Every structure is written in C-alpha cells, then in structure tokens.
Image (cartoon, rainbow, N blue to C red; front, side, top):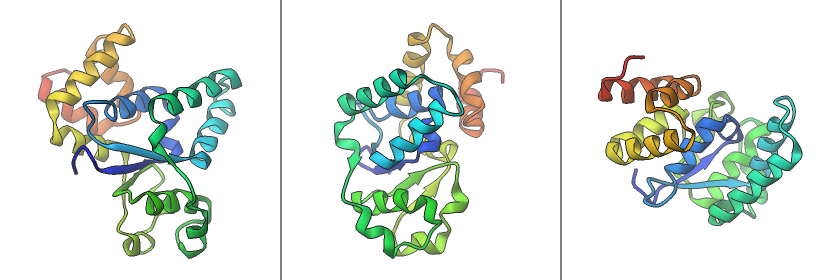
Length: 186
C-alpha cells in the first residue's frame, strides 16, 4: 500500500463520527491513501445517520457538502452496469462495483460477510476491517498517523489518550497498537 492506493470506504465505516474523521484526515495531504465512495454509499450513510441515529437532515446535508468540497475526486460513477456480473451479497454489490470501477485495491468495511473471497478474487479487490486498514496505514507512516491523530484530538479539545478511548469502540486493535507504541495505558 502507498499514498496512491485507492480504497472504497463503505457506509458503515463512515457513520461513526470519530472513525470517519480519522479516516478522512489520513486521506488529506499529506495523504496515506485515496478514498473512494459512490452516491449510493453516501446515501446509505445519510440514512443511518438520520435514522436510527437521529442526526437532523441539515447536518447530514452539510456533511455531504463538505465531502464534496474536500474530496470531490472520491465519487465513483458509472459502476451500475458492473453489478449484474458480481456475485457478492446483492445489498452490497454497489460497493464492490464502485471498487471495481474505480480500480480500488480494497474495500474498508465492518460487513465482511457480504464480500466472500470467491466474489472478490476475479476483481482483485480485498476486504479490510477498519482496524486492519488503519494498522496498515500506521505501518506505512506511524509518525504521520500520530501527527494527524494529535491534530484530531486538538480540534476536538481532547487529549490523544481521550481520542484513543473514543476510537477504541470502533477500531480496538488499531488503538491497541498505537497506545502500546506511545506507552499509553488503555
């Protein structure tokens, strides 16, 4: 993996605010990867944020607007014709189709069961959970990841250990590696 690796972020990893913030910060310059998603992925994220989470539509609209402003190149289009050729779970064929269309190396998702290996192999796409993905970015450039986590904590008015405590719910094995390296008690 390198800073030009294309990665599709599934809706489920874009819903938790702290995880979304971390993933997007790591895709900002100096970046560690290039994020990709589709209108359908973001619509799924918005639906989840609004119901059952209860975020008002103006907040989700603002979020999508900010994503377009800062990551305009992330949108994958014209992937729909590929969907009929895919064999993964029908509910997530749009995600794999977006990955194939964009030339993505991986899909980052919690929902691995919807992407069996035999459905991915013909397309050269792999599935990674968010902890595994973040650990691979940490291996790529630990100093940059720590720098961006510190900036995220500062922006939120938290200490790095407090941010890691919040992130632990979403990406526990990633947090364990970072905390151990920094000598932070978990």
